[in-house]
Length: 110
Image (cartoon, rainbow, N blue to C red; front, side, top):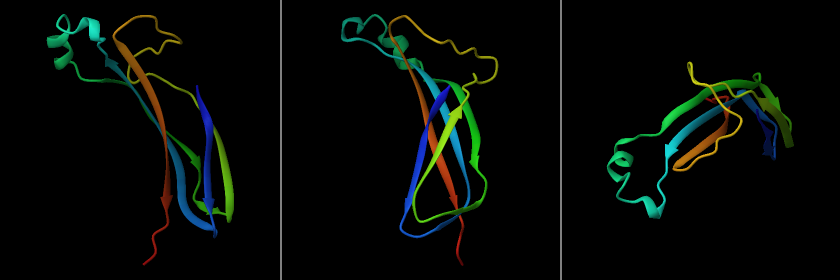
């Protein structure tokens, strides 16, 4: 579960076309200084593997009032395709990252 709060602050009310949250997770091979040479050729050929990629709508189109607006969220993490996500990992040479990125779609003015 990815959870947190998106904070939006504005001097004036802000018209928007919705707020969504995108979660992306990758697994990377990561070498230590001691292993250079052993895995070097393998490491150079391995690209990050995407294990999570999903988007959730947080707020429907509308208007944020002036001042501070806090939008709490809980985002269930599900593996991409048939990939299984585990609660923990014990091992070496692997880096796992999950990032959440909020996107506010602004109303365009002509």
